[in-house]
Structure formats: C-alpha cells, structure tokens
Length: 343
Length: 290
Image (cartoon, rainbow over all chains, first blue to last red; front, top):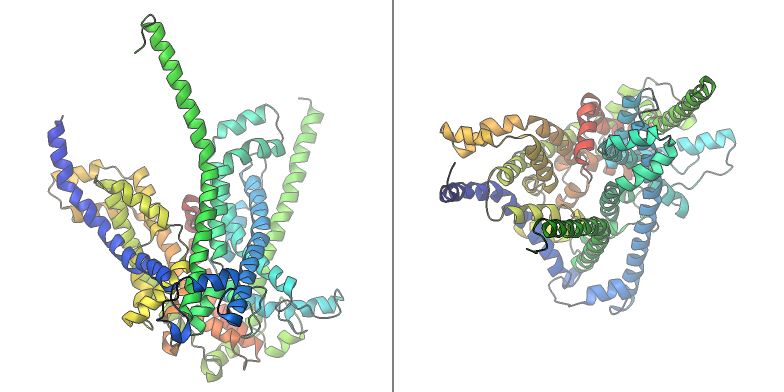
C-alpha cells in the first residue's frame, strides 16, 4: 500500500500529461469557436454594409426586435425577422410532432418482445437511410419530384389519375411549401429518432416489463404506464437536441425554393442570418446577422435550460427526499442503539 | 388459461403483428420510392421523364452522365466535387477522431485539478448551435485571409465535443486503467502508451465515430458555402455543385439533373449499405444528432 504522501507525488507527476493531452482541443476551441462567438457578440453592436466599422450600440437589436430606428429599413428588417422566427417555429413543430409520434410508436413495436415482426433489421436500415443522404441532394430531389409545372412527376401523376385539375404549387404555395419542408425534415429524421428511442427503451429494466406481462397488462397499458414515464429523460433529451437542430434548420429551407427566388414563408432564422452576412458579400450586413445570432443564442439557452431544469428537478427532489429519509432512519437507529443518546 | 382464450390471444397478437408489418412496409416505401424514382429517372431521357412517371429503368444513363460531365453549360464536374468533398471530409475526420481520442484519454486516465471543469465545459459547448458563431467566424477568417481556403473547414475539426463525449464514455466503460500502470512499469512513455496501447483498444468507438464524422463532413453544405466566398469552380464541394445545378435556370434537361443528384448521393448510399450495421449501432449508442 502506498502512503498518502507517495500517492500525492504520483498524481502530481502525471497530472501535467492530462493538461498536455487536452490542450490541443481547448486551443483550437478558443481560436475557432469561442473567439468567433465573442466576435459575433461584438459585431452585433456594429453597423451594416458600408458602415460596418461604426459602433451603433443597440441599434441592430432595436431594429430587429421592435422595428425602431433606421426608418423604413428597420421596419422591413423587423418584419422579416419576426416572420422567419414564426416560420422556424411552425416548421419545427410541424415536423417534430409527427416525427416523435411515429418514432415512439415504431420504437415501442420494435422493442415489444411479444410481437414477432419479420424483417426488423431491414426496416431499421431502410428507415435510417434518409438521414445519411446529403441534405442538399435531398432538397434537389424533392424539388425535381414536386416541380410545380404539370410536368413535375408528382403533379403529372395526380393529374393523370384525375385527383387534381390544376398542378399543385408545391414550392411557392404557403401551406404547401411549409408542408413539404415539414415532410422532408420528418422523412430525414424519424429513423434517427426511432433508433435513439429504441436504445432508450432497451436500456430500461426488463424485469418491470416481465412483471407487467405476468400481471396481465396490455401492450397499451405497458406503454403508457411504464415505458413513457421511464423514457421521459430520453424524450426530453431528444426534444432539446431536435429543438436546437430545428432552430438551426438551414439546408432544406435554403435550397427548397424555385430557382433563386426565396420563399418568404419557409425562410428560417438560420437562412435570415446567412442571407445578411453571406449573400450581401462585398458589403455584408454583419450587424443584423450578428444581432439575430445573439437572439438565437439566447433563445437556445432559455429553451435548453427550461427543458433541463424541468427534467432535473424531479430527480433532484426525489434524491433529496431519499437522503432526508435515510438520515432520519440513521438517526433513529443510532438512538435505538445508543439508548437514546444522539450523536 | 383455456385453449379458446389462448387461441384468441395469439390470434390477436398475430393480427397486430400483421398490421404493424403493413405500416412498416408503407413507411419503407415512403423512404425508398423517392430515391428509387431518382435513380430510375437518371437513366431516362428528358422526353420520357416529362411524358410519364415510370418504375422501369431506361437506357439513357450513359448519355445523361456524359452530357452532365462534358457540357460546360451545366458547370458540373463530379470528379472535382468528389475530390474536394473527399479532401475536406477525410482531413476533418482524421483530425477530429485523433484529437478527440487524445482529449478523451487525457480526461479519463489522468487525475488533474481541472478535469471536472474541462469535462463540464465540453458538455456545455456541445449545445451551442453552429449558426450562432458563424458570423463571427466568417468575419474573423476573412480578416485572416483564410476565406477561399480549406483550412477553416478542416482544422476546426480538432475540437469535436460530441465525439470527445462519446469516446470518453467508451473509455470509462471498457478501458482498464491498470494497463496504463503496467505500461509505465515497463518503461513505456505516456504518448507511446496512448498511441500503441490505447488507440488499438478504442477501435470499435473509433470506427463508429469515423463513419459519422465522415458522412457529416461530406454532407456539409453550410460551412463550405460560407467559407468559399469566391465560389471558384475547382474548389466546389459536391453539395455545392448540386445546389448550383439546381438553381441553374439554363438547364431544361431533367434526365441530366437527376443523374447529377444520383451521382452525389451514390457514394453515401454505398458506404451506408456496407456499414449499416455499425451505423445503426452507433446511433443507438451515442445518439449523434446535428
């Protein structure tokens, strides 16, 4: 057995390697991530276009959030920004709700030991596949399939069958284009969510399911009373990651447009940011896009911490209760053992 | 349980299984049909595609691909796209896997004062969205003169919090620290222990994470289209070529467009079908989500 002093010496002599090993990560992080993040905050207080070097204080935020200052430009920017926030929210909810429902259902079916589903492995492989395909290609593919002219394959087919009389505006219509983007996002992600939920369900204690089965619980009861409550942490994790992913939604909304003409009703916040700093390139609007990024960052932090806090609180509370009960018990025990003398 | 009751129970289960099977087949069709039509249309001529929807392949594949590659109107060169995407994806994957292993190993094997803080930090930054830093990132890179270069697309891969997290979990669960101790006694240096003992033991985790890192970088559209400001033709990646092909108004040949899209997703699908088992295991283990 090494003495405490010896152990100390050993840990001191190797600790420096720990720092050396993690150093490259942190150096690169600070240079390529943390400084750009701080830089974004700084840029949000500076001007746009040709006036990029002027300090403007909170003008960008005022314009974005309230449409104050900057006259007509400010108002227009405010309207677009609010519209993109609404678009992002609608498209995210519209893809997340069906996605989580389908994934949950499939995950429950695939993990149910009573059901024998043929080709489970094959289904999993196929359902995950859309997630792996390049998003840019997916957008181009759907754009070609759902082309608006009567020669677009889907419109063509529906016209031939007599389901519709006029070609559907899949790309420029408000509800249609939003619906399409929701569908594409859902199509790309439901397999991934399903597999994550499946691994979550398989990580639950199997004896609970056995006990329920022996007690004669139906699959529906087991799902509602055992699987769902125990799966909550994983569901919340899925929701948080999907939400952060949803706020960043870029590839599909950016590319699913007719030619180069941007659809105002599918433009997300990420597209707004990108447009202002990238497409106006020789004189980019750093100020507006940086301010929008800061707003996005704050929204992400708020939503993320609400979910996390909501999740953690009950766990913590339960643990606290347990600890209290434990202490009480120990105290009582000590009382009994020592004949009433408390320690 | 009486036999009648038992029979009805199994019959119920069987009908349920059949219903589930049908739902699964439907979802499979929804997943596959768009990709199938894409591949079929890549082999058909423009006139046929406009004429009708078909599930039978045509014989125009060679012509479509040739037209796509040789006609300068399309501004599309699959070889250039593949080359650039491969340089970025391979470079970024190698860097992120090696340095993530290094970081995770440092966090697990060594006991140092800031270990807990460093790990908490990595967990926290996993949640920061890409878009939030991109404005500052691009402005900074332009200041450094690094736009139109692959460096900002490859080097930042050294920091990959999600991969560090995954490999750390793997090491925690299946890497015996006694081995490090034994290597030390045998006089093996710390870096040599890492390179020759730890890395071979991390192979399963490395395999899963490399696949994900590669696919993610290959598919990345946002970063390259942000950093490559001049859009020089010989720098375009595959997703950028597709987006250019798609927004090109001069193209009136659907067969060629489908051929281009098919070419861009073919490598990914091949990789996926070969490695699907690992990929699905990997998703189940770590849940890698953008």
